[in-house]
Image (cartoon, rainbow, N blue to C red):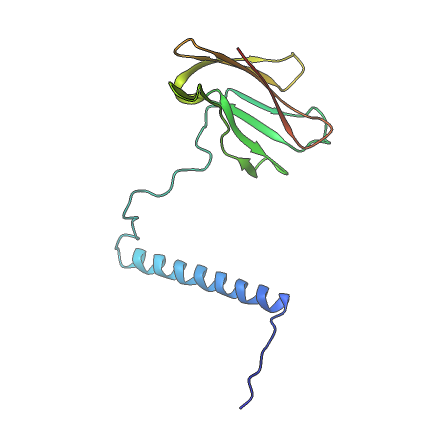
Length: 163
């Protein structure tokens, strides 16, 4: 008996994956339509309504991008922290949140969103940048962060000063 080893080509793999996806979509649609036609409820998640939305910070303090078309980066600040960075298109979020954790190594550890209050200011009138001043609720320190994009590259720049 001979064993044949078939090396799948890229076209075969794409066709197989496409077939599996279409089959899954058709079966899922058929099951939902059957349940609706029978008057029965559709499947309900046993742990709640589902996963939390990825874009969970709807209220934005600041939204920015470069003033030219060279840089394709967009960012937003919400709740005083960098909440989203989108690249290469505005609907493709690559960073969910970025915040500071401040500690002296033994007596306290502060998380920016939990242990500080903040204010937001626009950098310059024509810019799409902002300055966030986060002050520790304890009064021990202050973080001043300027957010802007580099017009020559696809990057968000955070310049932070720690007082």
